Length: 199
Image (cartoon, rainbow, N blue to C red):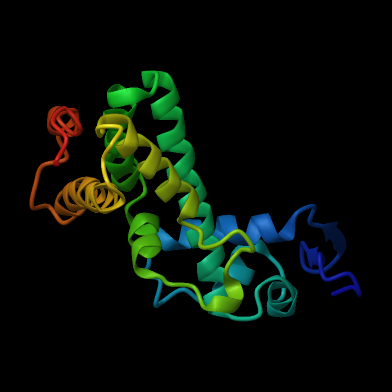
């Protein structure tokens, strides 16, 4: 191992190899491993082995397992937000955008079951939060805007808050029921989301 934490030896240690973006590679390896094992079973040593670096190189980016899990959650939250934002834009906003973002939420959960479960069950420690807030803020802000698009303009703050909770409960409930096999992962069923607001 060289002095550069991102430089490792491969091919029996004969040729030096520089990793351009080790942090991104470690996150990718963590995501890949998450598809075959539980978050509890994930280890930094296994992630290091997958990428071909020493554990010391990993620790420079992720000092502990929890910090890696947070990075995976951030990746998942970003992906969820991007999927919903793209769906809203394609639908043109308004009530159609409200429906489209709910459907995108369920589709994202079904396409990324392990990552989605991790995202919804991992609360990062305060010291790991982004300066802007938690990693779910962008998605929640999008939900609030979409709910506002289908509520009367004079709806009270309490009504708006309750509507956001109900809308999230509807899509999250359907996503989890489908992931757990209690409902079929049926596109026709998903397409019903948002046609009738739950409030």
